[in-house]
Image (cartoon, rainbow, N blue to C red; front, side):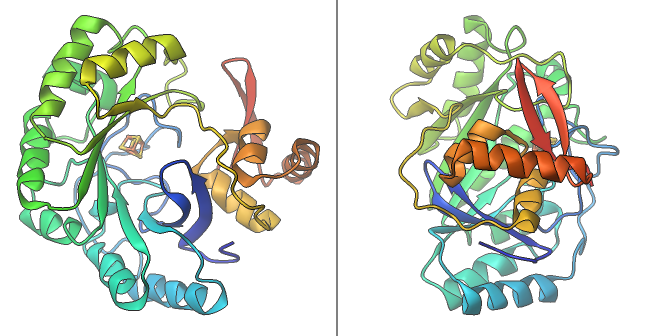
Length: 310
Ligand code: SF4
């Protein structure tokens, strides 16, 4: 477990990625969009300017420390508090991973910066890349993603297509389904048409299983998501509900738990399952952290979710 690190979190158990060490290059919450379904809450002010948001030498320093102290992960993933490609040198993490480890690297991105050749040049260094595409035209894009000024649907799709053209690694597309907004089959068919134009290796169908930025966002039912996946074809699968895959128990400190919840708000049972820990023990720890103000609770879809607002 990444203890007492500022830029590293997890490893987070993931059905597809196994134990994934998260690397966070962006201050909370800096993003090019303000998606209604975002599990991190609202983006206070959307941005599209890239920069050295955190010192890359410090990030690489932490990765070196982590490698010396633990170094066990199946993947090293750029994700976290916002859009990682906003960092001017995000590709340095992939270079370090290739030079220093045998671990696969992953980029989770909303794809809005792929119109920039420099971003594509750095992103191709990742072994796997996951982009987002949940709209089918400008109006639905604005409604769902509320992007920064200057970012539009055409720019997003053209950038993602250009990236696919240049990228030989595994490209997956996440389609986030919001009940009553883009869940209708005629809308899904239009999204599927755009997604097909990216020739992805895999399509992940997700929905709001964690509290969204906009409380009016509702998850679609599992059966509906299954029908949606069928429209996308054989490379699509529903990833919305995490199923336990027999991960070994993780030794998690309270600081690491808070760090994890800062990037991944979750219910007690989701956490207990993901970390393979007893639910009663997890509940006690979470409640203690709430009582000292390190965590907060919020009820969503009939369940209490724990999150860190700092
Ligand atoms: S879901 Fe991703 S792209 Fe959308 S606002 Fe949240 S961090 Fe940004």
